[in-house]
Image 1 (cartoon, rainbow, N blue to C red):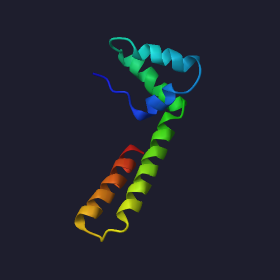
Image 2 (image 1 turned 180 degrees about the horizontal axis):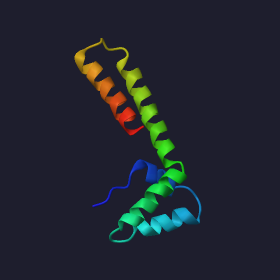
Image 3 (image 1 turned 180 degrees about the vertical axis):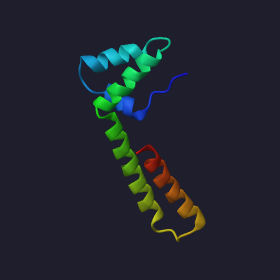
Length: 91
């Protein structure tokens, strides 16, 4: 079972014939490796990767603000470290 990721969802929302072609491609029963590569390149070209990083940064900032009033603790540090790790790992 395939997964449609945030970068691809963003790219598919862009206007144009290419986005329409990619939406049709996703409606097929199974995708070849080449078709998956095409979808990945489409998501990159349409700014989906940048959008995903901006979204991660926004969510991280919101989480840090929500946790700021709480005293420092192992749990808080672990949570904040996890956010940083996830973003750095994908960046």
